[in-house]
Length: 183
Image (cartoon, rainbow, N blue to C red; front, side):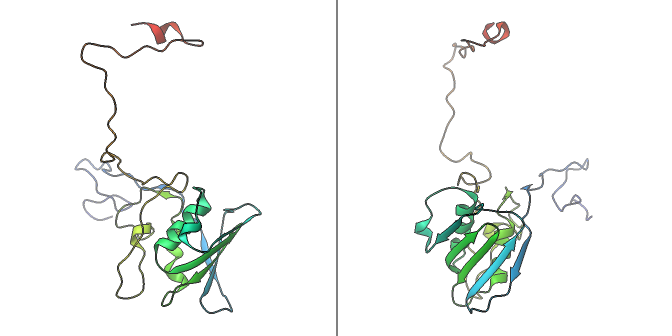
């Protein structure tokens, strides 16, 4: 443990309390399996993404839903290193772009269920390294709803506040208790 950082490397306050909580979620265990076909990478993971079904994506435009398997395909295409994705249960097969290797995609798969990763976390989608000489790509998106992770304060949505002098409406209706309607 180094000075100014907690056990997991996050900044700590002078009193020793964490300033920033660790990322939420659970990493996926990923093993790259050998493939006889050049340009094809196959991964086995410790959870099923499709049940017994198959999902095929020939391009990012083929992704029309927001399930975990769809989000994984989105993140894989976002790296620029994948041209096709096929997922059957817990086996992910990708066609690699020229200059890419399967080991460059391990952290994208591993981080699928990690929410709000630290900016310098190598498992975050934004830390994916491409072929030498190219910039990293990706982003933090929730696999359940496609929404950007992190602080949403600058989304432009402002919560409505009651006008000055007026109180918020109390809860009423069937099932409301006296304390719900008391002012």
